[in-house]
Image 1 (tube, helix red, strand yellow):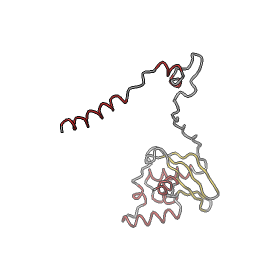
Image 2 (spheres, helix red, strand yellow):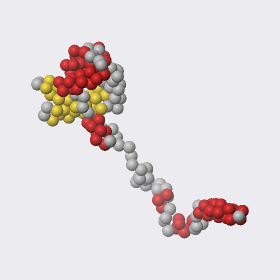
Image 3 (tube, rainbow, N blue to C red):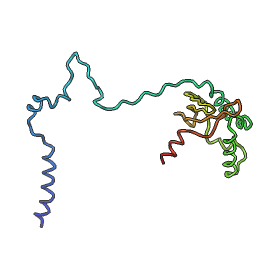
Image 4 (cartoon, one colour):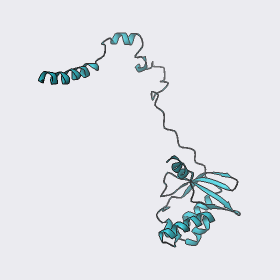
Length: 177
């Protein structure tokens, strides 16, 4: 019985040990060019792919200042910093205010400032890369809460652009789950 047990452990160990060994025919490999991929380029040649086929990290998209939607975001950030309830209500669309009020009622709060206080803007409040199509716009907004930026949707009500609580980034996450 001991011999059988030893056979089942020793033979696989030996096979594993010797399976890593090459054929020992290194001269043949270098002569036929099978190691050509590992060879250094000639002195005057530049390597064609220095990363060896590894994809490079894409460069960040160009940031273009948002001219049309920037005043709306600036007003939002200012209202949040000053904790100005009336100013905050003026920057949001009617549909967004109604949505907030339903959520506030569920949470038992009447202050929009308090309701939104868990998403501070901090000292950073930027808006770039706006896209406007008719009465709908979208721009990348960067704040303390969203340091990498988030695509926020805007709507035009009357002659004024208003902030919404919608984001194509959130829509993409919800659609993927």
